[in-house]
Each structure stands twice: as structure tokens, then as C-alpha cells.
Image 1 (cartoon, rainbow, N blue to C red):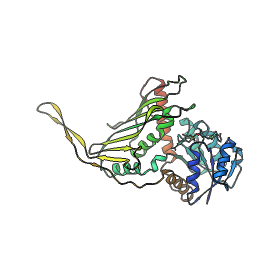
Image 2 (tube, rainbow, N blue to C red):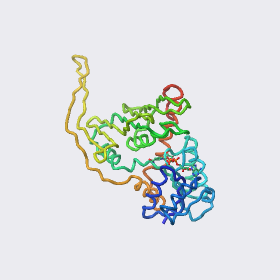
Image 3 (cartoon, rainbow, N blue to C red):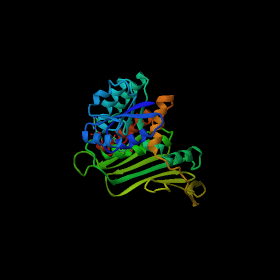
Image 4 (cartoon, helix red, strand yellow):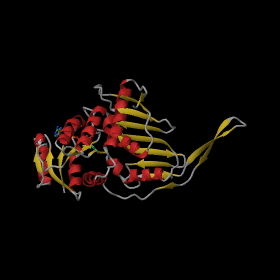
Length: 335
Ligand SMILES: NC(=O)c1ccc[n+]([C@@H]2O[C@H](COP(=O)([O-])OP(=O)(O)OC[C@H]3O[C@@H](n4cnc5c(N)ncnc54)[C@H](O)[C@@H]3O)[C@@H](O)[C@H]2O)c1
């Protein structure tokens, strides 16, 4: 059994405690939070789990093998650094860290210590994203041309990160998982209606050397909640609507082909409109799959789906997007 400590029992922490408690090779030994009232809730729901507000006591506790960090992003680096330095495996909530430099430092440290460093990119473990991956890999939708994601709602306005850092890690990590091609550059714009420099609406475009393009729309200011992703190939298009209870994925057997008519010196576009197919997806909680992946990486040495690479690639795009927003949408080339 792998003994886990979960730090942070706010909004997301309870989902982690529930899922790690249900993971066969994991034991939730300890939950830590700075707020005693949150720990009282842990005690009520999980009487055998230890609790503490003394976060530093975790580092010297040799019975803890792994630390799961579900605190605000600006605390991720320091907590993960302390956990790795004390020889513990680390799972960080998304986004991995607040800067690329911090992510790289943690990756070096995890490698030096021989410990697993993983990021909770929950969506990679959903049946919908797994289906999209297989549709691409099997060639079913043809050559992928575009990815267009909308994640908007009346969201909780964060005080430390803008809407892209809060909402886009999910979609960027999905893009990173689906597309083997490395992104070339980003352009982003955004606005802060609170006038505190933290954008509550933002639009991000990720450019590639090929003719593939990806676009993200994120907002905390929309009264309607939309969670939609379009994935267009030259054979078919996939729509992932996460607001649908069961029919989350629809595959449109519709596309257009382009040819040129040299005699008349013009481009010809042929449209083919076919059926719409709704695949049956397995109903499972993605977080359970993520928890198992972390435990397997520790126990069996497997590479998790949401590895530090996924975390780093996501942060690289977010950091470049931040620069682009502050420079009015300038194209920022990714190193
Ligand atoms: N994977 C997902 O789908 C998902 C969903 C929501 C949030 N998250 C991520 O989870 C993390 C936490 O988000 P949240 O919405 O639960 O935040 P939250 O503010 O609701 O909860 C954070 C908790 O951490 C505690 N905390 C803060 N600093 C701490 C410290 N230094 N040591 C110990 N405890 C500390 C706070 O008291 C609070 O209870 C963020 O990184 C967020 O992006 C992930």
C-alpha cells in the first residue's frame, strides 16, 4: 500500500480524497490544510484519516510515500519542492506551477531523486478524450486540421491567476495529448473587467508549422455554461460537448475536399454531407483513473498519461499566452 498525504481540502481536495480512498493500492493517511474547519469536515467523513494544519510535519514523516497537492497554484512550487526533497512522490493539481522555470526545477529535482512527478490533467482520463484519441490514431477522422475549444461560464473569479491559467489547462493538456506535432507559436488577447490586471475573458490561438490550428475561448463572465470542443479532420469532424450527460461525443461524417481547376485557374471545393454517429462511451469517473495511474507509476514504474511532460507543455503555452496578452496579441514563438 502506498501511503498518501493530500494537501488542500478546499473545492477540489474532497474529490481527490474520495478517489484515492477508493484506489486499491492507495491509503489516504493524512489530509492537511491551513484551515481547521476544512479538516473538521475530513474527520467527519473519514474518521480514520489523520489531519493537520502543520504542513511542515509532513516532510519528516517517513510513513508518507506520496504527496498530492491541491492548493492554489502560487503554492505548488514550494510545496512540491519540499515534498521531493524529503523523498516523496508528487502529484500536483493543474496547472503544474505558475512559471516554466519552476516546472523545470521540479522536473530536475524529481529526476535527481528518482521520484514520480505527475499533474492532475483529469480530462485525459475521460472516455470522451480517450475516444477522440483513438479516432485520430486509427485515422478515422483523417488528417486533423483544427481544434476549437470553448470553456465559458459564470466562474469564480480567481485572485492570483487569469481565466486562461484557471480554465485552459484542461483543454491545452487535451490538445497536447491528441496532437503529436509540437506547437510553433501562440497569440492571445484578453480583458480584465475587474481592472486588476487579471483577465476574466481570454482568447488563445496556438499555431503549428503545418496547417493545423488550435483555438481556445475561456471566460468567467458568461451566464451560459458551454464546454464544447471541435476536432476537425479532412474526413470527419468530432464534437465533444461535456454538458451532455451521456451523448458527449458526436462524429459527423461530413467534410470538404479542395482541388484546383487549372484550366479555369480556380480552386474547387466539394462538400460531402453524411451521417452523424454517437459512440457508446464507458461511464467512469476520470479522477479514479488518474489516481490509479499515479499509484501505478509509483508501484510499477509506468509512465503516467498526465506526466510532468504534459504539465510542462501546458505551462509553456500558458506562459507564452500571458506574454502575448500583455503585448496586445503579439505572436510569441515557443522555445
Ligand atoms: N483537476 C480539476 O479538474 C480541478 C478542478 C478544480 C480545481 N483544480 C485545481 O486544484 C487546486 C486547488 O483548487 P481549489 O478550487 O480546490 O481551491 P480552493 O481555494 O477551494 O482550496 C484550496 C485549499 O488549499 C488550502 N491551502 C492554501 N494554501 C495552503 C498551504 N500553503 N498549505 C496547505 N493548505 C493550503 C486552503 O485553505 C484551501 O482549503 C488548484 O490548482 C486548481 O487549479 C483542479
